Length: 577
Ligand SMILES: Cc1cc2nc3c(=O)[nH]c(=O)nc-3n(C[C@H](O)[C@H](O)[C@H](O)COP(=O)(O)OP(=O)(O)OC[C@H]3O[C@@H](n4cnc5c(N)ncnc54)[C@H](O)[C@@H]3O)c2cc1C
Picture (cartoon, rainbow, N blue to C red):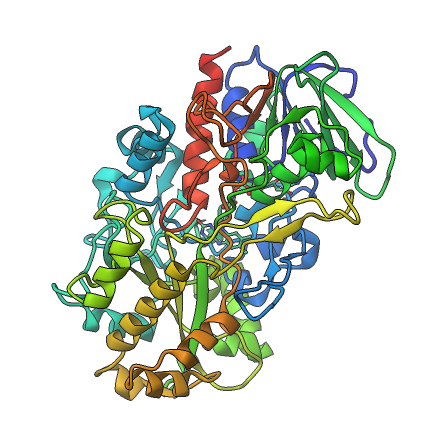
C-alpha cells in the first residue's frame, strides 16, 4: 500500500519487521527483495513524492533540460578551498526512486579489480567480482535501443541479464558525433571495447543507459512497480521526512522518527527486526549524526546526546572529480537547438510522446572512453610511483572521457563537449552537522582537488583528450574553444600548466558519485561504519545499505554498483532471518 504522509492515516501502530529509510536506488531494491517472502513485512519511508506521472523523470533528455527543484534536495557544497573557494551545487534525488530519477542515466558496473579490491579490503569474498557479476546479471533486462538498430558487436550478451527488473539499453539515436569518435579509435592508444561492463572497462565503446522503451528506468519504476506495490506485506510512505533513529531499549535500534513534509509534528514507527538506512551518501550519515551516532565529543559540543561513539560517520567522503570543456562546432546536428529553440524542443517532445523515439528518448551520451594513463611517459611513471595506493588494477581506468553532443548554454550556437572524470580520486571530504545549526542542512565538503594526485590525473586526462581531438576529422569539426580553453591549449604546448590548472579549479563540478561516508571495513577494524554484512558497528538492529558504504568510488559511475550492492545486501539480510 502506498501512503502519503501529508494526508493519509498512516499504519503507525503496525510493527513492521523492517523499516527502510529512503526509497532511492538501494532502498527500493531491498524493499522489493525482502517482501518476496510474504511472511516478512516492510515499511519504506521516503521524503520525496510519489514518482508516477512526473514526466521530467520519464523523458531521458530532461537530464539536459533540467529536472525541477521539487524533485531534488538542492544541496550546495561548502566553499572548496582547492577549487578557488567555489561552492558547488550538489544535486540528489528527492522522489521515490531517489537519484536514479534525476541522474545522468549512465550505466557503468566498474571493473573486476574494483570489486576484488573491495573483497580484500573488507575480508568478505562475497564482494568480489565473480559474486557481484551474478547480481548484475540478475538485476537487469538488457533490451533493444529505442531506434531498434542492430546491436551486434556493440555489447557482449554473455555478461548481461535479460529478465531482471531494471530495463537498460544502448543508445537509440544516431549522432553525427558518433562517427567522428569511432573514426579516431585505433588498436593502440584508443582501443575499442565491445563491452566495458564485462569486468574490463578500459577502452572506448557504446554507452549503456538506464532507459527502456525510450523511457528512463528508475529504482521505483523497476523495483516498486505496481505488481510489487500490491504486495500486502509492503507499505510505502512518501513525503515522510526521517529525522532520527532511536533505541527504545539499550543498543537495539528499533524506532524511526519522522514527520510529514510541511508538518513538524514528530511521528514514530517501530521495526521488530531491523532499521535499514538507505538515505544515500549525504543523508544517511546526516541522520546517523543527528541520532547521536558519530564522534561523541563533536556531538556533545552540539548538544546532541551521543548514543554510540563511531567517529567515521560522515568522514572519508570520496567523489569522482569531473569537469566539462567545450568547443563551438561546424555542424547544426547537435542537441543545442533542443535547449535554445522552443519549436525544435516541442517537435522532439511530440516525437517522444507519440513513439518514444528520437533525441528525447536518448541517453546523455552515446560513446565514452575509460582509460589508464600512458605509463611509457616518465611524468606518468612518477605519478604511479608516488601514489601507488591509488588505483585498483590493470582493467580499472584512471579517468574517463565522455563525448557530449552539445553544451548547456543559452547561446544559439552549436557545440561539442568533453566530460572528464578522475575515477579513483584520492581527495577525501566529509558530511558534518553545522555547529551553528545542527538541525539545519548538513555541511557537504567533497574537498575536490585537495589531493595533488587528482590534479595530476585530470591534467593527463585533458592532455589525452587534446591528443584525441588533434587531427581530422576533428580539425574540420571543431570551431572556437569556449571559456578560456584556447589559452590552455596554447600554453600546454610550452609545458606550462598554470592556465590548465586554473581552468580545472574553476571548472570542477559535482561528480554526483559520492561514497564512503558510512564506509564498510573488516569486522573488528578500528575505522569504518559498517561491517562487511553492512551492520552498523557496535549497534544492534541497524544496517546501512546504500552508496555510502563503498569505501572508494567503484571506477565509473555509482548507480549500478549501488543496485548490485543492494541486491547482495538483500540476500545477506534474508540469510540472517
Ligand atoms: C544529478 C546526478 C547525476 C548522476 N548521474 C549518474 C549517472 O549517470 N550514472 C550513475 O551510475 N550514477 C549517477 N549518479 C549517482 C547515482 O544516482 C547514485 O550513486 C545512486 O542513486 C545512489 O543510490 P542511493 O540508494 O545511495 O541513494 P539515492 O538514490 O539518492 O536514494 C536516497 C533516497 O533517500 C531519500 N531520503 C534522503 N533523506 C531522507 C530522509 N531524511 N527521510 C526520508 N527519505 C530520505 C531520498 O529522497 C532518496 O530517495 C548521479 C546522481 C545525481 C544526483
